[in-house]
Image 1: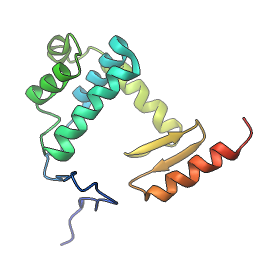
Image 2 (image 1 turned 120 degrees about the vertical axis):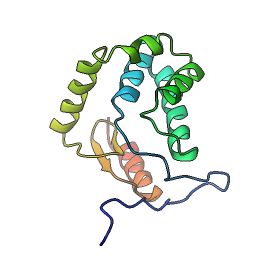
Image 3 (image 1 turned 180 degrees about the horizontal axis):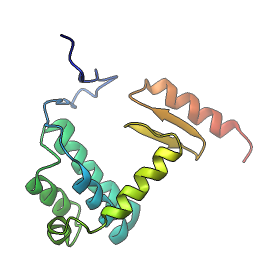
Image 4 (image 1 turned 90 degrees about the horizontal axis):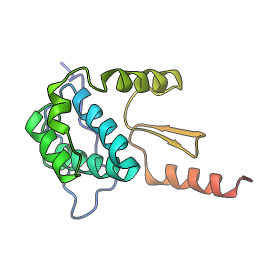
Amino acid sequence: ARPIFTAPAPVAPLPSLHPSFKGRVGNTIDSHRLMALALQQGGPAMQDALVERLFDDYFIQGLPLSDKSVLLKAAAAAKVEGAEALLDDPDELTEEVFSEVETAYDSGVSGVPHFIIGGKAHVSGGQEPSVFLDIFKSIAASPQ
């Protein structure tokens, strides 16, 4: 029997980057709620710091993003306050996250990763770097 899911092959890993696809896949709603909290507290910079930590935890360390202790450590590293209270209240920011998911579905997003570049170009899945370079060049060359 063929597996339903297979780990994607890295396109061009950096020499020091050793991705792990051994992390448990689970419900990520709490990580998304934390990302919403980070955005509220510190804007895109804080949210980016949290996402970087979560990506490292999952893709490099192989840690489960459904584990509360993993999420709390990531939130602390990104200086997100109130993470434990948020995670203890399953309703907090859940409606906002699901609303964003619906908005994404309505705009054509059907999976991750999905990038919207310049508000126009949509790229889904793991792509070669040349795909992104071509999009960036096209955007740079187009009149604003």
